Length: 343
Image (cartoon, rainbow, N blue to C red; front, top):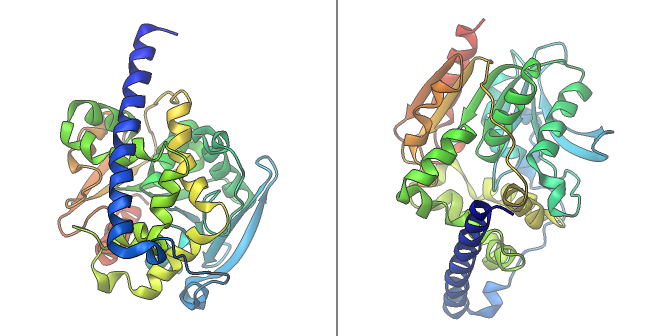
């Protein structure tokens, strides 16, 4: 092991311990404030909330991925003879985050929103190494082919965006056009994280999520209160854009057996495996960012054009990290304008 790798590993361990201690104090405070009954309460959610069965969103289905050996849940709208638009969610989300896009684009596309492996009703393999970037991007490739297509318009947010960048790098023939929301090109994210202390502080969760059991407990506490904090917290989605029914849908997805650990395994796998080599992206790309994002600073979006041959950056002023929900009308307008302009 090289001295540089030893130093990097040591720093990672120190930050994991540091944020682990802070997390323990935070949860202890929650436990004292709300009492053990509320802190440990989790509502049983055995069936989908009605809003997830809305026929206007499309039909539910499952794909058996032979190479991966798992089943992927999806919701599809639009005729099968139309071009494929594949929607890939982030953390802590599920297919339902794309409800506005399923309605908006089904007249022109076969719109398919998936639950990534380990999320929602998709299968949940055990083990951190079942959630590496290489495995996930291969899932996306197999999904496209199993749906009967050779390429797609790939639209993604947050962790889904990280995956989408990788898909466009490794399988450029698979991505006709790329739309990424609030997810930095991997090399830009690394550069910004290492050179901006403010972003490093905002990325505390990357280190905290490495701790097994403790991070799962934090997410599940107060009936998945972490998810509410994500969507309703400071500079986040207005309550009228994410109703209590919508929140129930997100909580339902996370309450399925093993899903919390699986979602955290995306972070754990990324820190335990060697990063994939970055390549330039040749697909026409639209990068959308919420200016009020308090998770990923908008500055890391700037400079991405060095790595993308044909890219357009759009910053939405009145939107935060969960931009797909914050301002779906503007997001859909930008996507539609971009797709029509690339025809």
